[in-house]
Image (cartoon, rainbow, N blue to C red; front, side, top):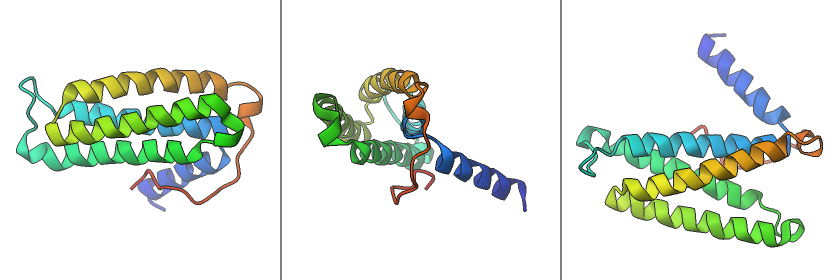
Length: 146
């Protein structure tokens, strides 16, 4: 087994054995990584180098896919008002990212990135509580690894 196969197996095991809260944090981490990558491809003049355009678009779309997975993970019944507020935020984030991708708008990406980072930190605190650390069952979902 090569290094890349071993690493992929290690990462898959980490996802399968992570608690629900930790999985949410992992999704946020993935979105933050993609948003950071997209923002980094926009220069000071608000332009994306033509050679980086595909990567910029892919990062925006990947972030949107992850946000959509966060939406799907919400338990609207048990989560009540908090879940409803998160759903509204996730819808807003995806709308902003569509516009940011179309217009190469670094400000929109940065705003979503800042809010996602704050939410991620809150989820990380919650995931460290004893009840959030229980492993969750494996289910079919969006594959954020491409």
